[in-house]
Image 1 (cartoon, rainbow, N blue to C red):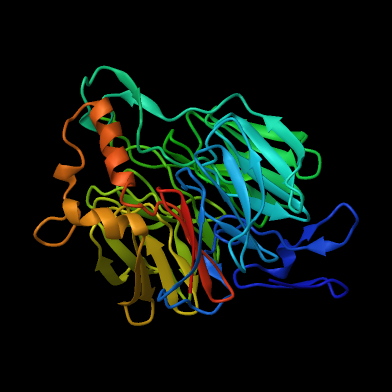
Image 2 (image 1 turned 45 degrees about the vertical axis):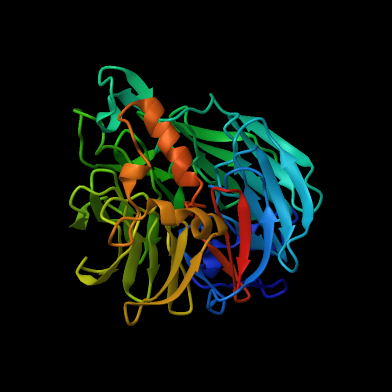
Length: 442
């Protein structure tokens, strides 16, 4: 991002000048956040990395589900060990760490000199970007995962249980000096970015772990209650809401766990009901939807050059669709399900999967042009491949109980799974894995 202070102009792909953020002193600064901007374009103003070499590794000693954020030569990332780390982009050395009392599976946002994020301890934090010292925290009603009886057919089917695949926390979006974020207490919050004071809150019907997208004064956010909400950014009043599909038998195909992107008057998002949606941003009317044939869409889409791009879980495909019509441009298969949201630099979309593999796809040609495997994937994936060279889930999940599913996830995470979404700056891709390694990849 380039900021010309005297001219009050912001240059950044996907970030219109009208969305500049006013600081308390009256000057202007660009905000950086999950998916690069408040509308969640997923487009980065950087040369495209080739993924051919690792510049450095930083060991966080806790799973990294948080997507990294890069600002002014520092990469910020959260970890399941309760820490947020600030690491120099040049050499991977630690600038500071800030410790909370819960996993930080929220991605950070930065505005002015403050870094914002949520923790499983139920707090939203703002810390100084230079020192790592706390500026303020806001206590929500507490975090929890989505719960329901017999999720995914896990036995015993009458027992109410937490969903082991509800892995993310909501990541903050910053717009007009306000921090917007969802919570496991069912609420969407609007907080004063300087003081942390509550401006408003809106109660949905269930857990909110999607991250808000903000455009033209409207906050778009999904809930596990299966609705996508459009809320007035100043008041929290409902502008419209859209109901996705329902499944009350095994609660497998219900809820919005991923985040929306907004572009050209359209809201794009995926859902666990196995559809990808495009809605009119003003009215919430359905423009089109794409059937994923029983597969969840957890990833937030990227929108660029007339296309919308996203990954799927069980379908194991990366899609490029016409943004206006939903027509398929191309799809590419991969070996394991993916929650990682694609990030675009140049004409290359980058995303990871649960088998620890990272891909770069040319969105003009539909060809994979770059690959990378995490250390855990190179060391451990071979023992879990089937004859086709894809992940054999039978070696991961050996019993159908909740305990067995959690143990299976532990085995899966040893592969250095890439659950987060890449951040890209100065020709370097930054991504963390579930073995706790943050990579800077050229």
